[in-house]
Image (cartoon, rainbow, N blue to C red):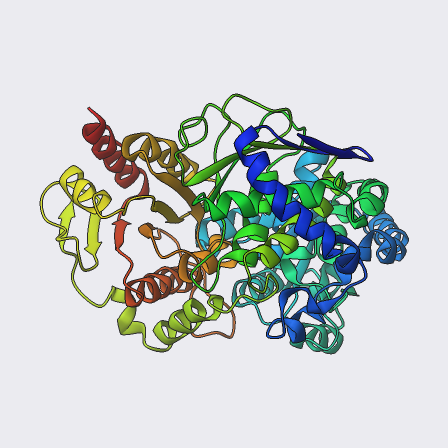
Length: 541
């Protein structure tokens, strides 16, 4: 059955799922959840969640409250372009980077996104025309280590090129953050203060989403228009409310054991929506040993979609496709608001607080400890074995013995029934893009749901679910040698050491929680990836 309104549609294409969702939908209607959420009622998720929810619900009215930003963004863009500055680089992580990347990708305008600590990828961004470049430094907390490192590296590069760095840096942050204070002290060109009552993953229609996208040339006013058109429909306590129907279906699927949400695009016209939805769903729901794990796949024909088992519900963005149980259609601004409503409501059905991220800090603390103790960056031990350009570091449960195919086979055998495999590539997502091909190959080989994430980008997304959600994942980490590292000015570490510390820190936390982790360190990235692909092919033959 479909729920449609104001240009956005949710279809439940599986009759059994539709029937299972019906009582949940009825309960949501009786409780008046949609209207209460729109009225920013913080009691919807229970007493424990109320203090956090009370300062995290302003996203329901952003289609109105973000309107004044449009003129400010347009004025700054015109000012920059009059000075020959038309290249926008965004330094941001998670909620500060994913929405702008989707917006600009959909609009077909150029935005260089830095959500990495890989020195090669950052060096490539530096190699662009600095004379034409403005850096948008975007961080809600104002203390994000990756973003602060990017700011320092670019400020030095601007200065060394004879450019006034302060005139080339624009800041987006919350009022009173350390970054806001620094921007004022340094005299940065412009500071946009975002609404502090919106969490990062719900911030697509705040300054975090709109400023970098708008400066790059996206029509962000149209984005707000699209959200405004659907807002009243999503606020209604009606069986035709698409957000209620989507949340009820996701909740019913989870109750039946389908804790994974497989996302495929079927020609929606939206570029990379799954990557944005991945953070929203995983970080909002993956906690207290429960949650919905988003699995972003290459398309409806990809392994893990049409052949999904009972532990997963296949969802398409765009027209329905064979194997899909759910589909959502609508323009980008409407889809942003639809999925935010549905995810927050699904949190109520799962009896969790969708606005906190209690397990994210653990990996950050572990990484900081490693940076404070550089000896630990050697991995803490010698590799279990070396196969060509691949050094093998195995956690308990995997011996690391034999050839690379043997090691992979032993590791993949640790995936529990109805578990999942997470491939985590702490590499350059441009130059090492071929690593992403491992996801469908491993999914086809193992028959289990398989995710792929670029590190440390995924730490601000699925990283919460890995540690707080269903504890049935196993983790394949890929790290790589660094040919030319980059110092972080006025910090005792390089980007390369920070990247490795993030990988090792996250691996340590996962291992401490009893999850299998296999780290493959590619001393030569191209050669190591080639050897890894050959090993996967050997297993498949």
